[in-house]
Length: 233
Length: 390
Image 1 (cartoon, each protein chain N blue to C red):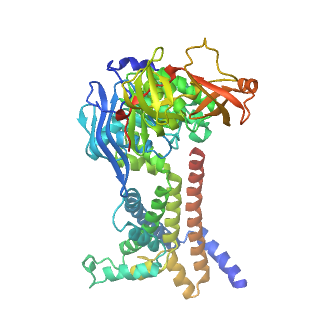
Image 2 (cartoon, chains in turn purple, orange; image 1 turned 30 degrees about the vertical axis):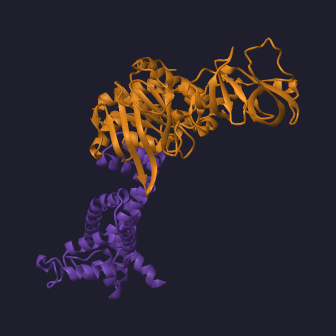
Image 3 (spheres, chains in turn orange, yellow; image 1 turned 180 degrees about the vertical axis):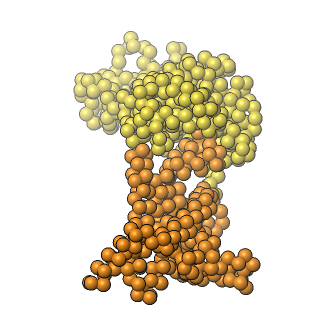
């Protein structure tokens, strides 16, 4: 009990004492996951839209693949991204392994099925009559998609939350493709692993508090917007 | 019906099946229109023509294919065949988009977007490239037209069913469509809301040079709003014509039954004797005085509201009631504020509508003796070759 208590006190001292290392790690976490989230949204929402709005051969297989991808273990994603980026791999020329870009790529791969799957599900739950009415109003393909996204904006925010929560707290993939190099590729989760392993519990607790705080505030902001959206729906 | 009927080109309508879609003044025509889904033919219309300014009702039972036909006509549903809108062939997806951008549709459910009423009404205009100010101005005018300007800032969950449907109609009218498609627009509304909206729609139709395709399963609605009507059965148009004409002379047993004209007579027309213009002789030898019609095989319907009931045979002086059936009351069923009575004679059964007061006065219990009578003019024989059998 003593250990935990001391750990908390020391953690708070580090947090409010302005330990630049800790804040640098936190900032890197935010940038890597924020970037990955943005890329996943830009690619995943239109892809989900295409799957929702079109009928093609093998569509069920694609949907099943996306849904499986939503539950893919990060270590497996890490393994495949590492295989592609390793010096002798297909993309080895790019020399991206053990850089923050490799971590961004891995997190995009983790977030993409989540974004696709949830936006696809939300679009499919739209009333078919409403979709038809949008067409009847004279909407072309892209106009129709834009109006449909506006209709599912609350569900899209839930998608953003789920995807961000998944990648900010993920540890397996970033360790494997980033290497957990302090000052270069170490993010919050990797740092917590390392500090715990060497017994610096107070630093680990401080990092954990930041991670929880980030996850909480991101969710808090999104929930607030979502509630606002629900009132307006 | 509506004042818009005056825009028709004065061509005589007849109760026969649609045929002359090449008529001048057609806004939208379809030839050999077919919608096939999953190997099943949902719509197979040989010919359809929507004339400028008319309210054309597509009437039929649930599942007859009316809504699918409407979607094929307004470009929501790809269809085989020739669809011509304002002189241009609608073939490709781009052609269907152009068609949708020149027309508007309102469905049974209002399908409002999750935003304010005003923004909803602006949507169609914005999608068609109108500027922000123009869209706002025309949307406000459309709200005014439907008498719902005060709802402009409401959101969809704060509207009643009737208000929401008015918004949907305002949204459709705001784009000033060449054709307005209405798919059961009143089906979800309560009777008073329905009546006031119908009155407003007729007033608007009279003021605008727009053609209307109105889908309904309700024959009274068809009668009160339509200029012309097409009866749809099994995805086909079985009869097209001016509403009054078609309702008086349904050309098939199924249509007659749908219209509630359940006394369906089939026989041969002979030249009439003194007083009656024609005689319809049924297979069992019963001769019915009827309107003038070409001699030969024919069918006719007897509207139950044209049948009068008596306790005893009517006196000789009421000569206009040429047809008299003496029999007994076979069945009595409520029909709204009236009662529907089936009178079974020796060789002929007829249905009649009576008021509840008359029912009491005549003591029409089941099995009671009763006399049914109807005028020759209530029976319009249609030569059999004119009506289509599938």
